[in-house]
Image 1 (cartoon, rainbow, N blue to C red):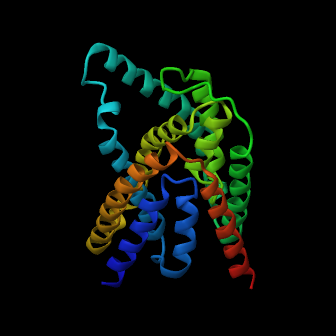
Image 2: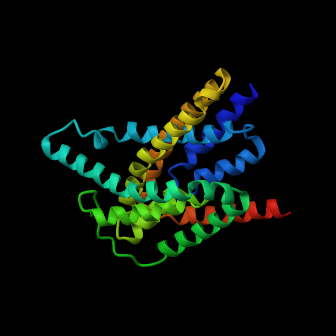
Amino acid sequence: MADILKAIILGIVEGFTEFLPISSTGHLILVNQFIGFPGEFEKTFDIVIQFGAILAIIVLYWNRLNPFIGDQTKKNETLDLWKKIIVALIPAILIGGTLGGIVEEKLFNPYVVATALLIGGIILLIIESTQRKTKIHSITELSYSTALAIGFIQTLAMIPGTSRSAATIIGAMLLGCSRVLSAEFSFFLAIPTMLAASVYSLYKDGMHLTGNEYFTLGVGFIVSFIVAYFVVEGFMKFISTKDFKVFGWYRIVLGIVVLLFFLL
């Protein structure tokens, strides 16, 4: 029963934070300090429930993501979207595959998370306080070179606490994308990234999991999916009329609290 309760709490944390620019991985690392699972199962659990949150995007944006429905114009637009997602994914494959293990070994700790939260929060506040010219409002207007640049910026999220969503959203906005487009492209880019990570994690460790661990994993996955579904809907409504400053301040406050907690 204790494991199920942990799975529910961690599923809520993941579902709530995955698509907000506040770092889901950072939050999971911090929460795991207090209620995490033992051994390698913790790592597998954290990765797989992230795809639970990603599944919410697939459901919410099914019509946008499915290249086999709609008229020919719509199909061409969807294929164009997936081509740009694949282009943006290239840096993550190259850099993540090369440096991922080193980063995980050296940087996955609360101090790095706190520092990344602080820096990311300050950057968000600076960007939202600066006059920017928004020139890209749709996927159609997004060039392949811009998609590739966003992909390179996404690799900064290898540093825990940076936030994959924050990195891609900030990067896209700096490159001239609107807030809504930046958030949506961040969502879409997460699909192949987290699918690959989840499949690989299950392939590597799945044979060693017990029946109880699979059940616990399923609970976290479902909770993450449900929470993320409603959070994404609310988040898109929020940023259609407001900026990201509240998330910048949240990151700064949380970073200070975490630093003080672990230092004292």
